[in-house]
Length: 222
Length: 340
Image (cartoon, rainbow over all chains, first blue to last red; front, side):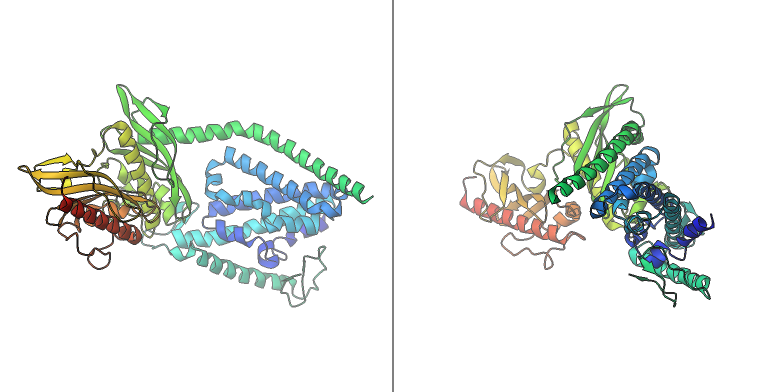
């Protein structure tokens, strides 16, 4: 149980997909103009990630190594399409505002990365907890970025007016450069926290080779 | 051995694909009905919004778009208690961040009954305000951007920042939506037989008391310019001028103008009748066409020197000016040649 919890927590900060592994950034920039979009995208990705990791871990011994990539893609694409259809049917407003980014979950590097590096080699339960951890790690970052961008850029939160009417929205934060700035500031804060968490502790070797943690606390893609 | 291995891998891949497809088929079956209902409900709500008094809507296919970038997805006749109230069109066309979809209602008396933004992918906080019910272009009267079109006459200019209030920092979105509304208005008014009546040549031949179709059409030597109709204006039996409707390719669409020239070679009046350029609607404003009146047909007409470009549509302005010049030259030649 402690091991599973460790896997789950790992994705939140220490090995956060966006801030540490730094994959799946494009969607994180594009959808975070409003909090609702950020939550929606985060939940959508978490769903696809957990389901794909579950299925691929379940069948990991039945997937020949030489054709694993196409099989991963079939599984990921199937779950993305399922989610796209469900969202269109039951959350039409959200589905409209996220537009093209939902189908693009298929090619989100986070899913392919985790499936290849983790769930294709690990037991089912571990894979599910990894998916949850990585998915929630992605979601909190999207929410953190979009709260700042929506509040400063539009004066609202979840569509509700928060700032006094005298506040002039800073359009900069809605536009891409503002996205990069907010992203970088959050990354600095998160990585500072991560360094403190890891301080004095020799980093355990991670189960995958995707990203190793050198002693100085900075992560680099392999 | 190797071939057998390949076949085996192919079969395994096929198995995964089949399982995936069957799963998708089930989900599709269970959601397709709900999705179709949602879209239908969206559409009906939009139609009701532009025609609140209508008792029902009948699909019609008589309304046609003349601009290839503006697509009419569906058109409906709004039925009232006593006959048709007008036409509602679901239309989509390019905007800043991708296609935007609207429902536009046009009443039989030639006014826009309402505009509803169904889909808009423009920048949140800027262009996306077009769809916001709480973003007011006129805070005093609580008029939203799309709300300002309600009651607007089709004969208006539809020029952003003149008779249409723009969304702050989102001129492209404002213009795109205005263009769509105007395109629907024009197409619908043709079907309804209202709107602006076909432009009459007498409008650009103010000095004439009778205007008749010319027996010898004017021709232009400028390639790409086609003269559609030539008319002659007479006063007490003598020819005082001639007018022509001409058409040419422009920036990314076509422009049609009506030009009137007096016998002494002065441009009497110009009307820009139509412009299908994607950003070309500013040149339809009367202010642009009025600049030509009084200019000599023989003298050079050039945007930037003696003609001011309509703001935001410099390329379209240039093309229209060249067409006016070519048409005026052709008319001068025809008047000199006689036998009109």
